[in-house]
Length: 117
View (cartoon, rainbow, N blue to C red):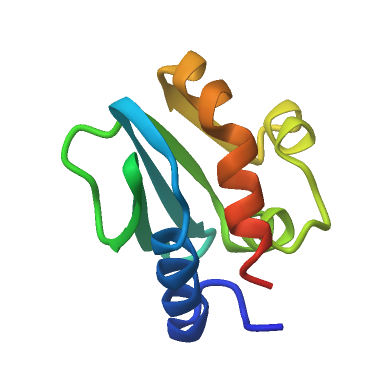
């Protein structure tokens, strides 16, 4: 298993995303910000779900959906040791933006993130 957030993890995410055949219009842009309680923001990346899926490092311009959590929560979600509903309910995952769009693409994105283990 590759370490969540590492360069190898992101390379694998990028490769897996490029192999998906999703066609969604309008495109949905999901931005993930990972924080560290002592250091603030430590990583930010985003997925563009439209004619396929593209993963990119850095902030998105006008994201449809924003996700923010600490590294431990992000890793637990990515590795399948926790689920988003529990993380949201306990305040460890903050979600903003168009929740309807998130619900529409959630199964594909969960499968994508799950494939990068």
